[in-house]
Image 1: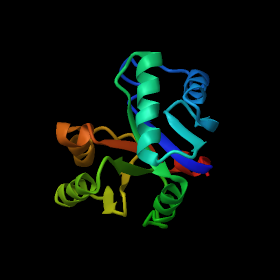
Image 2 (image 1 turned 90 degrees about the horizontal axis):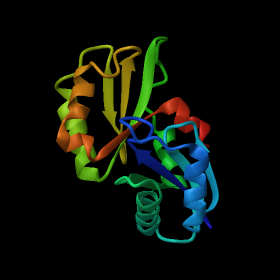
Image 3 (image 1 turned 180 degrees about the vertical axis):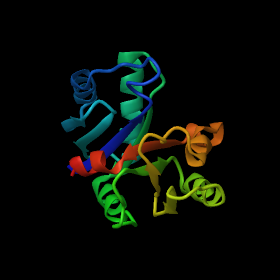
Length: 173
């Protein structure tokens, strides 16, 4: 069985409340093995022999049926997940800065986001494109107010991205 990572977009914000114990039971009921959840943000590590696209579809269907919401799930193989974490570009992050990884639904969207971000940033905010993700550093307390945050809120990016704190991702290893 292969280890996979699922990142659920938009749960436990905006009125969609799901207990991680219920999420775990739901995914186990969809025939996934070794299901583990992390924090309250919809981060899941599980095992399956199915192709990744089928795992994503099956998990979205199970979540829709069980919790009555249109689930958006981003899926990665564990190898992709590790490569993205290991690819974080900055070792010199000062105190007072949040480190994020932005996952996109397709490579073209990730590229468009990175390109759009390069022209709008205000230091100390930084953005760099990686393979399959965009890396973002932003001062604590301003995560929702910076030019990058406003770019992410645009409909073309909001629907096709999900953002995770690098420290949270590292706990999933």
